[in-house]
Image (cartoon, rainbow, N blue to C red; front, side):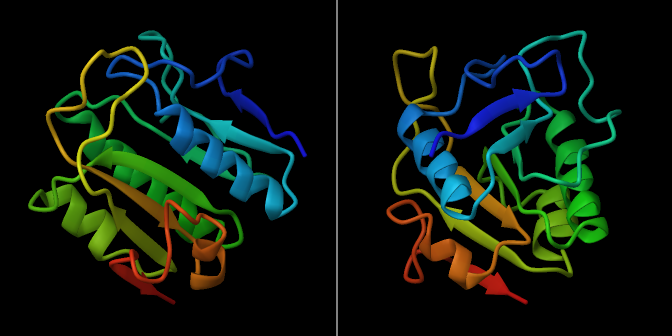
Length: 170
């Protein structure tokens, strides 16, 4: 089953970004998980367009959301807040977010660790190599699944598994 990837910006894909596109093997695993769950489309509110503001959009509630936000200082906090709010208001819709693993930040504590719904967190061993860059990132990365339960985590394998999930709560 093929999964259609669309964004809020005239159907553009999330192939590239101001900080680099999602690594292809990771994106393949995420779209495979989405297809296994029966969804045919994933919404990306973060296309690589400086004039586009995915935070101001009303996100669709009928499909999963994939967020690889701009990593510019100050922007990640807003994306974490939006993802947490969207997950709370639509508990049946999964949201997967890829961000730097800066767990000491206020936004990580306020919107990830303190999120009240189902959430799963996966820290990657090593550094990811983003599309558009020759070298691996200079920072660690974390994949956060809002409204992702343990049963869904297993479908992420090899990216996520019970052994790799640091926190999974309901």
